[in-house]
Structures are given as C-alpha cells and as structure tokens.
Length: 108
Image (cartoon, rainbow, N blue to C red; front, side, top):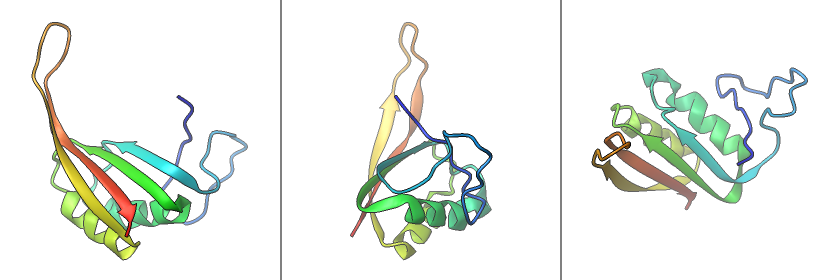
C-alpha cells in the first residue's frame, strides 16, 4: 500500500524534498494510534480538514486511550460526523489479542 507521511503539528506542509510527505487532498485518510496526546486533537483535526476531499472518509484506529471525545469534537468543528465500531480480536495461535475502536468520519 502506498502511503504519505503527515506532520499535523505544522500549519503548512514542510517540504524537506521528500516525495512521501502529504500534499493535496485525499478521498481516504487512515490513521492508527494517533490519538495518544491529549492536546493534539486540534492540530490533527485541522490537518485532516485541510487534506480531506469533501467526500472523504477518515478511518482512525484507536486503542481506547481516552482522547477520542476531544478529537471527535474537533472533527465536528471541521464538519465531520463519526461512526464507531468496537474492535475485539481474541488471542489465538500467532495472533495477539487486540481491543480498541475504529472511528469512521465523513463530512456531514
């Protein structure tokens, strides 16, 4: 899967000459375990708002760290509504147990 790196703490993309940095707008934005800092919600939601197309979906996988409500409030300010799925994978041979949530945001 091709991916791009994003520095959401910066207001504008910082071009270091790396072609893998986020530029433009996207129909699908995926983030995993990005809600680890309580105060990052405003910056991350703003970054997503700047890089999401009007029809974009945003998928965030969150291991229930507790910063989800503040992030969802900031995403609402950016015009996104949220749908949530609980994730629970029991441990089995070669697979580690996982519990968390899939947060799906769409403009709306």
